[in-house]
Image 1 (cartoon, helix red, strand yellow):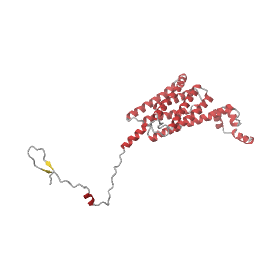
Image 2 (image 1 turned 60 degrees about the vertical axis):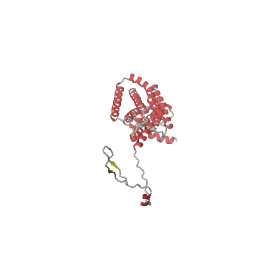
Image 3 (image 1 turned 180 degrees about the horizontal axis):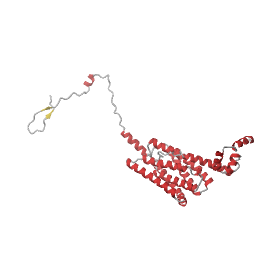
Image 4 (image 1 turned 90 degrees about the horizontal axis):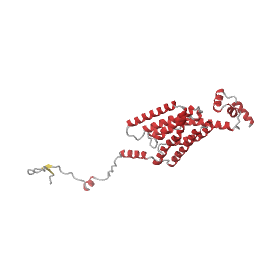
Length: 314
């Protein structure tokens, strides 16, 4: 075993300079030497830091695609039933606040980077909910999309120019924001007894991501506000996950109404009774075939009578 370790250390101690610099930037010089160059995993702190960095990078990469299945589902079905607009708007604000707060505090990008991608994807989902919503008026949908786009642009500009002190207060506000961002979706699912077009992949990914984030923030950041936010988000995502299991396969009421309306509009061809070709002409003549009635003829009546036409009887 020692011989194998010696051979491996010869490789790890001579890695290209860019790789070594990247490793040192992630887990500082001391831990890099211990874990990579010496392959010594006895230092618990270094192992925890390396694990946290690895999880953080995985979350950032996963965060770049976590809502893509939800977007694809809406575009494919052209239906956003079951999705709560307030939930996505509040969730987007929570992501944006955490993003700017972490950036201004110079936290490692691996501890908050997924918020960049999640914010963008949530904005897209919010706009799609309006685009494929139940509003029958196209001009109103366009107006709502324009207002929502302006709201998000204004929010990003305000957060970018805000002082760090005010961002700290807003970071505290992410706790109730996280709560209220999930509650409308949870309540909507409960009322409809269905999760509608909610993506199971997105919910499961958020549960896993929150578990990992609770660990990474406690290891690298140590900010109790950020940790509490991820803890609350984990609890609420678990509730959504339980609803996904209980309501799996249920169709939301809005989708049922659309299906019924579409069925009513469908014109089915009338069934024509087939004619028995073995029957003869005599059969039809002797079994109630009506004879043509004679045409109506004009008959003169006495003056003042309103009747001018009647059927002449043989």
